[in-house]
Length: 359
Image (tube, rainbow, N blue to C red; front, side, top):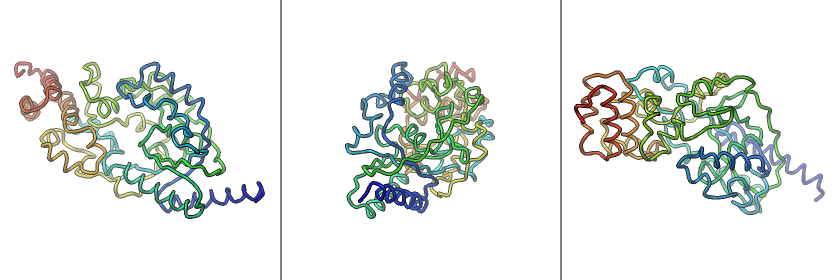
């Protein structure tokens, strides 16, 4: 087959793959090459600055993260897909953030864990491609390996990296998940898009802990998502009052972003809120037993932080809430029978309410 015919065949295949991806629930699909030299340099600078905190996995795999062909030999293209998750029917985010008796959970985590759903759909799409081109090789990813998903998404034209470091799309904002298929198919690459943040720095200004230390640079050690999800030890005292009522993640930089007025509501029922997690009462959550935590959050991404960190986060939020007899009772009930990590944060919360005498 001539090179011209091969190109026509690959162009036609890409068109089919894009159509198939929509039938599997993805809203967009792009293709990039595997050249990430600029990304590799930026990652090294970020790691050298220590901005990854205790996320050792960010440097554990060496260049496999920025050189896809080293992670999966033979890879010459990366197919990246986007799936919207915005739960339009959930409680209005700012109303929850402004109610210190409630706990705020990042909107992506209100329903079922996206990893399993995305991976299942990606495997189905990859299998469909393999039916068409039997000799192809592939491997799918969704936060499951050292993959520079944002850089790959940007290269493939799904959006641009905003100043908050998330991918932004002019028609869909930033409320979407990303997934990848590493392949040896010589598909044509799709065009990247230009950056459209301009002079806007709303995300930088609103960050409660000023974790966006410069445009496009996030110090994870200051980020509330890191502090409430990735960090397994004690939350630094200097950040506790800044966390407010955010008990799992933080969406402020996305909520304030002008481009998210174009965000599309999810079509996936699995991403809709469960157990009232879109506007939960802190005291109610703090009363959950470990069995409650495990059963009610079965299939939820929240479950991976574990019960201890769950109580730690809620204790901080209760310390930041307007005091009441019920809050003091809830906090004092956790002074016994819990881990030292939880007790430390409970004691801090009680001090916030002037109840050092209980300690």
